[in-house]
Image (cartoon, rainbow, N blue to C red):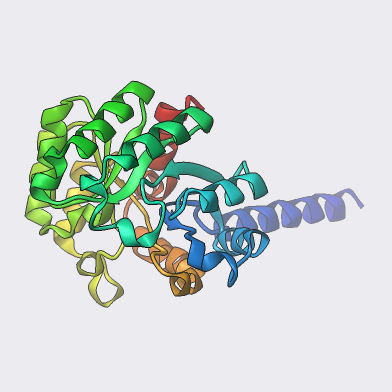
Length: 274
């Protein structure tokens, strides 16, 4: 009887270990939008269900308008990391940096709610030198939060000129060549990058060697993102999380965990005091 009990205990232990080994790697997606045109198609409870089906530990969410972010935050406060997008509607993507009324809008939202960052916003080159963009950098410094910038390297450089200690999350790694991304993260210690839509990072499902080396050399600077910039992109959230886990599995476990969720956790803790 004792042998049978011991054998059963060992089998249970092995089964538990096997289950743990097969558990999907936690992922924090730092590039999720829940903008107004998605609300009817995917009400807040359904949107949260998608994020949970993807196995996300957290999701950094911004929206046009910010009301979308607040809806998801209310639905699942333990899952959502709120980020304030300056846009009140989609049509402001190309005009917001020259619209002074954006400043009042962002200031009011920052006073009313808590955010981890400002963005994701679009700014290229000299856009980063406009009074509106300078004020965004000042507000991020004042509230000790990050800037999620869909920008070229030139605009990012200008943001750091306005505040050398700025915290910048570079959307899509700027869509810059890997050599340029390396130069930027080398130069700026408080520059992180999400890898949303970086298809050249994992061609044919395999991790590109130059990206692999970049991740190895800068293990605390990269994060995973989907970018649900249209309502239809929500259909890819679960698929993208699985895709990310596949190429992350090609990296050493500690490095893969950094990119999958730990780097995002550290950034959220730095800005939200979690």
